[in-house]
Length: 460
Image 1 (tube, helix red, strand yellow):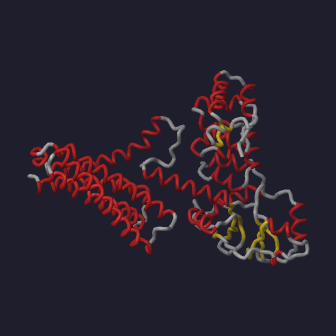
Image 2 (cartoon, rainbow, N blue to C red):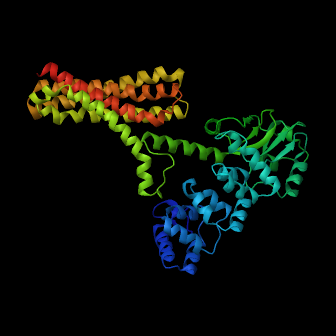
């Protein structure tokens, strides 16, 4: 179905504010035209407004927050990227911030305040009701990046002996229920979760039916100490919609819903992509040039040292290159192709590690597959380069050197793309963080070494 709201761009097929609307909003901000700005923002979804705030530069963002007569509510605040959320919060009046925080579920408040300093955190917590504040503080006591931080404290639970009628009457009488929930969790007298009933099953059953008799067959609980990455993996693998969270005594303390689990999964994938490129995971399109340079410089400096290894290898073959200058022009072909192959293998391996498809039991099979794939690619490229060496340079031996070096480097690239992240993972290091540098260095060094070594052996 096409989104016909103002702000959606059906030509792009994307649910984002249209480029024309963004341009009009920026113009309204520049002209301090509050009525025009309010009219443009009125039909937009809170997520689109959050996206708009992220796209504005610092000066326009500040002017936008001052000029707009609307308020940054909880729905907007939770959608704003963490990189600029604190900056937005600092500019909000206290009463507006307090109202926004009261609109948010406990898990969103935890996400908002967990990285804040003492005074800023206290300002947010002070805006909450006593019960909501206690729930947030309870979640903050769990380890960082754990299920306890991810969970929502507002839990819809009922005794397993209740009937459907009793449960429905209970739900209708309460005004504290979360905006979205998918299950009624069944608990025993000690508040241990023993099952759950979907809302669809609840509404379609007779009022006299017992909850325990219509509970789902499959039921999983999650420890509050469980790593959030493992939680997201479980939701994805077992197709969970929500899951109860228990404390160290197996008592129900919260619930995790699929939207929060998928957010974690998306964040982990994004982090892997950024780390493979040597980019800080906190970077954002709104960052200044100075901040961006500061984040990337350490990796570039590290690459200088690794690149020096390639230079050192080349220096050992100075006489070979001097005797046959054409080698200098051909060296990058072998190294560059190996680098691309290594990156391909590395991307597959890091992704497989993240999804648990690559582990101790599957490592040997994956390594063997990459070895043969590297050999096949190497042979295919070797035939092309061998023919090119003969046709372009009229030297069959040069073509043989190119072919042999290409086979060696393709094998090294394929194996390195798997072995390097596996080794780092077993050492307790993040394979996405450092693998790229190691694999690139490996393919460059081995590419130059193989090519110049074979050239010295066969041509000089």
